[in-house]
Amino acid sequence: LDLEGNKDILNSHLQDICECEQLSFRLSYLCLKGTGITKLPREIGKLKHLEILYVGNTKISDLPQEIGELKHLQTLDVGGTDIRELPPQIGELNNLRTLDVRNTRVRELPWQAGQISESLRVLLGDKSDSVQVQVPEGVNKDLVKHIPEHLLANSTLSIAILDRFGPPLVGIFKVLGRNVR
Image 1 (cartoon, rainbow, N blue to C red):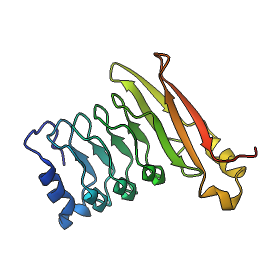
Image 2: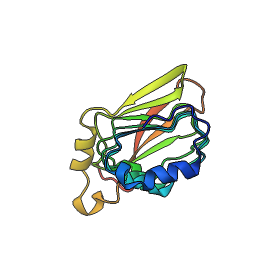
Image 3: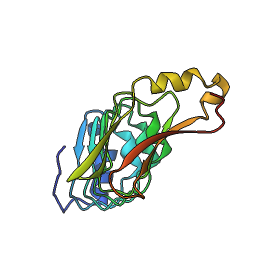
Image 4: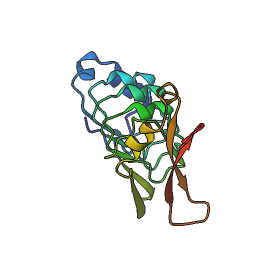
């Protein structure tokens, strides 16, 4: 469903789309770029087969935690929005391959340990000078190998995006919690 640039699309229309049972099982592509929406409804989680979601260049400022229910999501574009942080539930999205956070204020990308996809591309910076961060091969396996089973569920791997010293943007990996190795 491509609604790009349609300024007549409002939050109430998106709510209706998400609650439509006929669409919830069939919709795999939803483009809302440049529309009049200001908020993604919690019902976005009902679109169980959604693979591609474009909400860039809208006035949304946060993502609902229900975004984590979109288990088939492969591409999420929030570029050019007022989003400052991503909900932790985004790190349960094992199929996510492309995350576009260009021209946003997102500075940290959370993932549960062992869940981050090694084929994930994260697009950072601005549209004219973007940076692509790819998870180094083996990071996920090595991280999980050294964390005891009982601590694994509470361990978080995040990618911090540093730009306080000016360009270029730098992606670093940090592991929160107590880590012996």
